[in-house]
Image 1 (cartoon, rainbow, N blue to C red):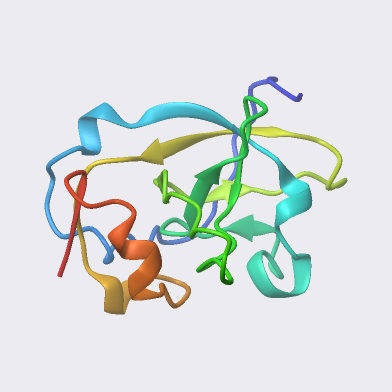
Image 2 (tube, helix red, strand yellow):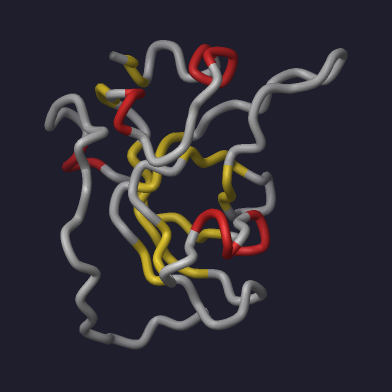
Length: 130
């Protein structure tokens, strides 16, 4: 994991998906498993956009939410959303640190990807979708 200090510019941060300031001061530090993201789809410009839905992979890392389950498999729980834009590493084998927004209000229409209602239901009580 690369934990060196670097200064980069990512342009304008688009957090228009946030519905309120609630929870923004309590984002959890996590490690992203980059193998769950597709470069051409999720970071073609080299950056993961804030607002991507994440799930706990059960191995101490988080990854892109896979969407609703297929019967009889249940829908994986939505852990939260990538809170800020993150620079992707050169290799998808390199895990990176990030912040997880896990409770508050989210404007679904402003997320960088579509979020199925079945996935939204797994975050009931933690995230309010508007």
